[in-house]
Image (cartoon, rainbow, N blue to C red):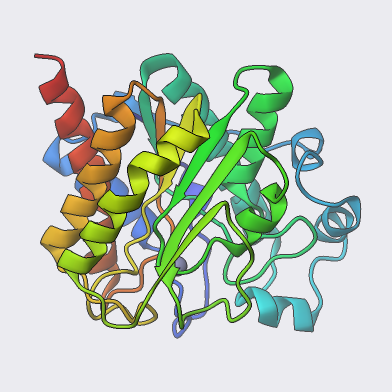
Length: 303
Ligand SMILES: [Zn+2]
């Protein structure tokens, strides 16, 4: 399974910052140590160029990012301090999702050990998201004629508000978000299908809801490629999550998506989304499940 990774996915934040930057190298190390990925599976993306960024984001927003950066108010909305390395990281992580999408079209399955920055809108960033990597990959592949239709399966605990807004009215891109009803963002945008869950939902109710909706999502999407935002902030005890999935529940969720998409022969791209467990190592460990399940599924399906 080819996976995009770049050491500069990680940028330095102040010690008390809630975003677990070190989850990226920790996840890479974990997957290599277990043999889920081999060194040759890791591919380094290039930062996306301006021409590609223009496909999704407004010129005004991009000009600001390229020159002065974000104002204090904009940095507060983003939840991160602006820096040149954050700008590079945002373009690299988006490049990683595009690279993974190309690999998935080639081989059926791929991933990015970052990405899923679904709170980025065309004209602004928020919720730790500067650029909308999945929207950029979809837009680029559509412009190139590599795909016509795409499905975005967003199971991060927060609604994919940026993605929903970017693709509202685009019939060729089906956006599905299953998220916490009472969680950020307060003002939800309209996806093609939104499933809002009450606080405290656990494995059984979550998996039941997923199994009820996923077949119809894939039927309606008629997708040439699917993107899975496998956020692990659905886990019990997550700092921001408010849901209560067990580790087994997360594995079952990941498997259900992989089986549904790959069982139909649709190329699948896995991106991380959020995760705010008690430790960074724990966050990385939870993120690893989607890759374990994906590689396991592909190995079994070959026989
Ligand atoms: Zn999230």
